[in-house]
Length: 249
Ligand code: F6R
Image (cartoon, rainbow, N blue to C red; front, side, top):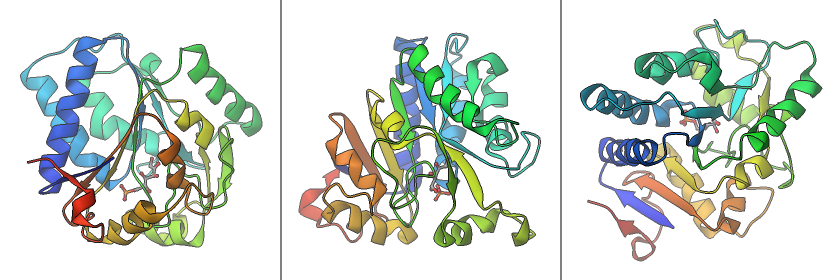
């Protein structure tokens, strides 16, 4: 379940190659996507690969995990904006192909319901990419989130606000609420890849390694998934017994 790569670039290149091959073999694949620093090199490698070896992405559908409440799609710190910058505009995906929860809709309860429903209507996610928060969150499912949750509104934890305010020049602009795909929505993906890189993720990865499924550590639910792989770079894997790691060179 735990795979370790020598460094972040090799991990990113492996994951982007896998995504490329999956899109090539199943052009109408439904991909669940994450944002954040961990994904940036993955999307960069994927966009470069598609530029070098063009691939028809016209039938691809993507669903993002989450969005800040209160930030319009045009806000530079919104996840919608991030996805356009990092991937969608580079590989020329059209808006009809890319789903993100809206952080500025009028009826948030309806938005939540419709987001989970849409994923199921389109046949579910074939592959979900996940990052992990230093408190173990996946999407914005903070510690304590029930494992049977669907898309919902979340009050961000003090830990997540502290971690993510690094993206905001004026830290007081960091939203305190978000809309996130639920844990059950994530667990219904047919395959899941969780990525973690950097020494600041070593502690949470050791906690995840030792944890039984427990809502206090949201990512621990993934241990119940039949097709989960956890990809780490050497720094993020530093506190996991090396005998338990599969090395990928
Ligand atoms: C982002 C998301 C979050 C991040 C996590 C790690 O869409 O769902 O769970 O994956 O907070 O963020 P980074 O990669 O910035 O450390």
